[in-house]
Length: 234
Figure 1 (cartoon, rainbow, N blue to C red):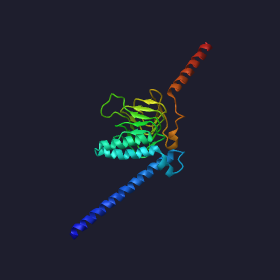
Figure 2 (cartoon, helix red, strand yellow):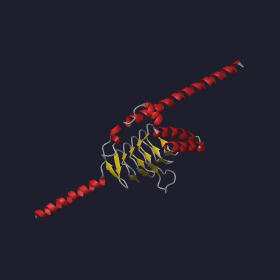
Figure 3 (cartoon, rainbow, N blue to C red):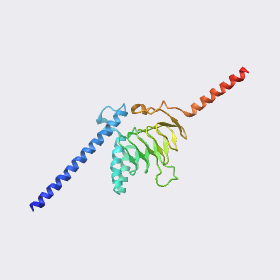
């Protein structure tokens, strides 16, 4: 009996230690998410404000639980958590989607992230964004975002392709093909514009983004003006 009691005590102490360590990791993970948001949102005034009042953070934390249950094949419970989070935050993330650390869903209303979507670390996603499929693919149907990607308000990224690290998707763009790293996708359908890699707040600029159509029109106007000057000189 004494040996049995000693074994039970050791087992309980081991489980208690595992629970404490898991709790510490969870707190550290949440603290990382809060810091990531404060680093990128000048409107955030305190950690408490971010933790208690930011729906993007709540949606990501709920997804962590739903994704864990989905991995354990508790599909109904996972989907239930996902739908409850959707109702509370306006953000729909399928439980099977893979979301990295430090992901900031700003404002968040009407964001949809599909089943096979993958979002890398420290990405920023604004309101109205869809990471969706085209309806004609099986298996991997949704996009994969690399690390430090910014997706502007209202952008639609549709299909099973990769958006490279440090890429930017302009507001309102419809992206249907791969976006290389350190590039910007602009327009409908989106065209690719090369740009210098930036980090932190500089990477969140949704205004000073090159417009490839405007650039081509400007070049065409300059060419026409040059030809007119040559004709006038003859």
